[in-house]
Image (cartoon, rainbow, N blue to C red; front, side, top):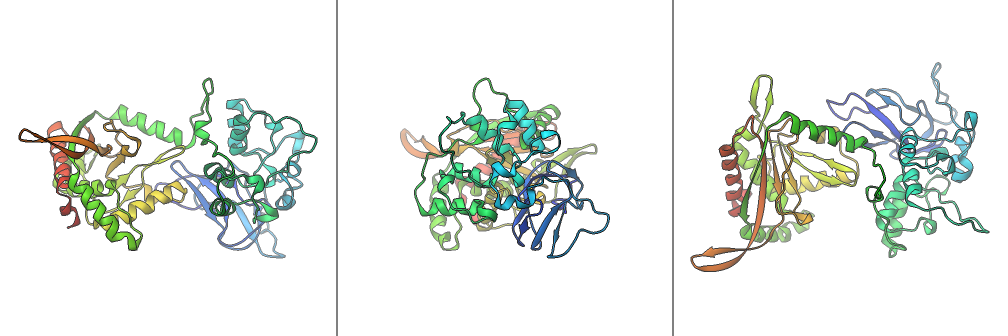
Length: 447
């Protein structure tokens, strides 16, 4: 089925089948990748058996719609159910190299996912020349991007061995610097999986220099399409600036005591596998400060400025192709240790594409950090329907004065953007001062 990933989800798209039509799947394995307006999600098979697709890749349906059946040995599809038309060789795709499985469809067409066809047209790649790595030899977006980035290979007397690998395995291999040609596959028909790539990376040094991420392959003169997550971000940020009167202010924070506290907590919590970051301290300080300044924990509606009862802090997480904001719920009531554990869990789930839609909705305030990129001060854009967002800069060496004597110290700059319709400059500055005071006396964050 198309799963219901959140209360606000109205539609999901079968972006990529991970198991070929007619292929075998085991319970718990990934059967297809689902795309919604906000996230990508890998759907696991609930049972073992033979997969029969009912819809092709690129199909958008409402939650609850049936997209495939998993059949037991000897079982047939229910009466009246029409499976999707498939290539003649699809059922044998698990044991057939991509060059063979990429058979012609009606009229000599090549099996291509809708997203890959659009991308190929946008960046000028000849679909007919590609060997697909998707189910049944289907050409995927990863194949198109690889063809754009890789110049045509010279003809050789002995053709190179075809590498059968999932798109996800190819991406992980690029990131970890693993040569797929020397990697043994454990998937159906010897297909290389993500786990195979990770095992190869763990057992030996990288065999080649990691390739750049897809977003970094663009060169001058290219047209980078605005779609998927990038399109949603563009629309939301543009709407945010159009619909709000945004004002940004900054304040410097002495982080000497916070640095000492974090170092002590890293050592103390190491046995539990929890490693607190400076952003965790900021989130806890923000949550406590929002209770003192409820005007910033609000939303603007047709009825006016609605002050929200619960404090749910969104944490911006950067991905290769965009930004997501998972939510730490009831952050004001959580101990700092729990905030550190939850922020780590959410960040990992975001980078692995395993966030549920409910984990990304309901935030009442957002925190975004660019300190790890060496940024001191920036202008964060409010994440609707919030009325404020806090930017966190890097911790750097600075000088403060004790009388006439300069003293070396650790300092950080906070950047607060508020919606001036709901929050004036003075209340915003007062909130920022409360966050600063808590960070400069951070042991109060443990209470």
